[in-house]
Length: 406
Image (cartoon, rainbow, N blue to C red):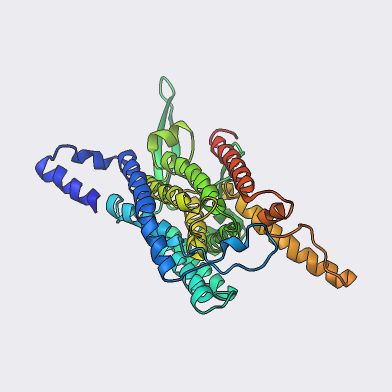
């Protein structure tokens, strides 16, 4: 909203300083400052409100050190992240940008699913919360919306280099940019690192590109479901999900800024995605909200994000990666999420297999998800969180390096 106000003042009154709002970097800086202020200053009021409403965490007895002390800690703190992200975005971003619209829808959609889950757990006294099938339906529904918009909306395009060689007295090479609809994405660590999902249907003959949505939309659904569930499982000890997410999102912010800048994308020889740079403002606000939330969520936590926060975080990260065509980097960027997911899958699968074969279930980990395994080994949760953050930083640097590592 402020963007449009200052644009009007600049065009009609030549208002001093109004032109600054045309720059993504300036608006991103304002967004992160504003989101930090909202999450830290007003976060305390939200926590007090949740405490007064007796929105406390019900802790299951898992035999973990310090577990009982967490009982009654306010949950649903994801509301802080959502509010601190959306207010700066509504004030500073271009609200007619299709990517911003998708991210706002994602935030509200996943936030609502998480809120319902937390509400059932707390007020209905049902520890299982929202049934898994309904969570999946919600995630699939969002995937359908995001996938369909990214595929069919005419404002979602990429620009590729086209080289025109004109043979005269001296050979002249003219580079130009061709804007087109595409389901191309980026494959990390390869020289010719673009892959088009449509090519998987090349066996269908002429016109196979028109059916690329049959591949693209299911891929989007899978990614959103996997990443949001991974973030949900990672939210198990103080500061883990918020900290690792902030690190991953910062790396995505670099990709987004570069991909949305025609000069930088050409210099680094990566895919240029028109209008995607606006997502940098959303990312800045999101990072500020996550860091501000850590003010209260670091050990010992004054508030938990609950599914309201964790599902929202996962959904946003997935949509950001897909929008900037870096979804194949998610196994690196979100390796913590995937390790947590994988540990649960391995634990449950192995337990069922050994129970069927030997009559007694056996475990690979002392406990899953993975962070609980280290808690059972006697590591303090602050040490676990710090080390997971360090791993996340290393992986994010590796992901950024892939801009030129081919």
